[in-house]
Image 1 (tube, helix red, strand yellow):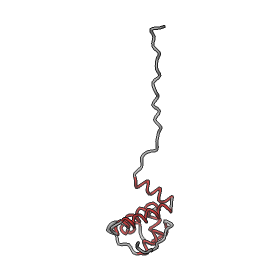
Image 2 (tube, rainbow, N blue to C red):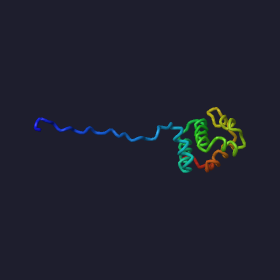
Image 3 (tube, rainbow, N blue to C red):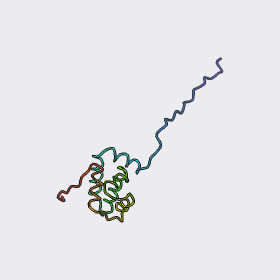
Image 4 (spheres, one colour):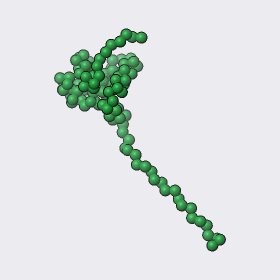
Length: 115
C-alpha cells in the first residue's frame, strides 16, 4: 500500500452561535436600567460634554426609556406622549418632570461649583 496517500481530516467548522446583535439603544436601555451607578455616570458625562440643553434632554429620555416611559410618565403626573415631547430635543420640561425622571431612575439632582 505504498501508493496510497493518507486521508487528511478536514477541520470541522463549528461556528459558535452567538446572541443576535442588538442596537446601541437596546443595549443602553438594558444597561442603564440595571446599573444606577452607570446611569448616573452617563448623565454626568452628558452634562460635562454637552453644549446644549437638548443633549441633556435626550440623555434623560434615554434614562426614562430604560425605566419604562409609562412608569416614568405616571410618576411625573404626565401622559406618556407628554413625557416624550418634554424629553425631545425641542422639549421644555418643568423641573418637576426632570426630578421625577431622575427619582424613578434612582438618581437625584445636585449642583456643584463649575471648575
